[in-house]
Image (tube, rainbow, N blue to C red; front, top):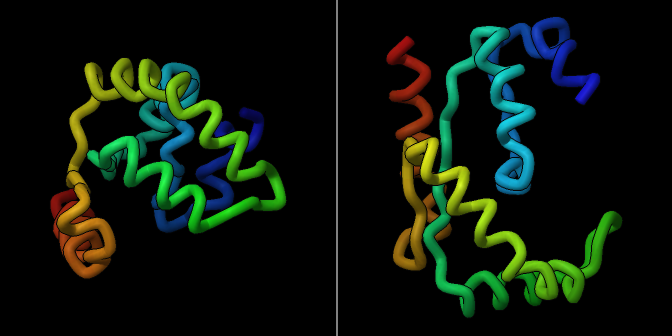
Length: 116
């Protein structure tokens, strides 16, 4: 949380990227972003439970957690995502038909940045 207060010093281009885990505590982080004048570009992942499990299993363990741990907490994550989505609409949504269409996301982000 301390780092977020220092963002303007570390992000002279005004761009910050946060992953989906922000859903768990967005209500503490996002006010810090908005106080500092950051806009939100939200990528909504609308994937089935099966697809999420498949992706976690394919990725495997990371230095900070195991695939099994992530699979175990999938159900716990759902209420946090729902709470986040009730307050914030995605700027772009990703589903199983366009999951790896990076060009689509980049094009939308480019438009978003030009909309300043």
